[in-house]
Image (tube, rainbow, N blue to C red):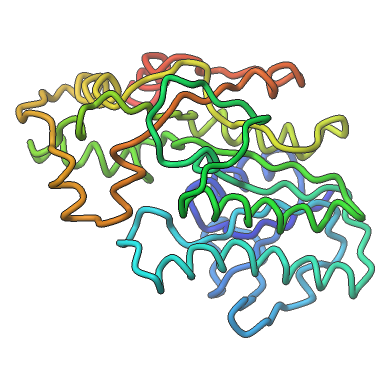
Length: 299
């Protein structure tokens, strides 16, 4: 097995790379700028110029597609929204085009997706993989993301993982929330009743490798842990784990919208997401509760 990873320099990409290397599995990265942060061979590509270094495909048997501009890093201007979508969709199309041109025998294509597929909404419904997508920007982005992954169905096993918030102490959403708490400006957002489907970084890594190596797994799966936690509970438990106190009242929705614009929708809304399908496929989560996840991260 040799694995090509796009987005390998990100939080999840680095963690998956480290785990694969520990199993003596060859890994190479496709990157916009050459770097060796993970100690693996890197190859350059640029989806905007329709360029990819074809040497990256030498002996590759499996592909993990994580590339994509950050969803929550910048306000959703029209230009930013185009970048968010294209950096996911056009990258997958470019890889597929080259795989097809070179007639490469890829065994599996495992792609990230997101629970945004179900929309930035707050309901009492628990969403499963059988539910239809919502009709807002983030849902439409996820639909196109998954459709681009499905191009590989003609010659490979395809798995799409709808990720929740990936919990890691040093990077990502958890670190950003924690930094506001440490500055004494952190608090639940809006009503605090919106759900925050999540997954521990270690479980996310193991899940990608499970899907990479299990030939019986294909299609779409929710990549979230079992416990449904709302924003208020999440924020207070995070503060407690870091030995901090929440001093401010909930941050009003209008304040969040004033700062982030349309992006605020994914912060002030959220629904429950079910993970029973991937568990039935044989995957076991090590961190099923937010308490166990935070205890591990902060111990």
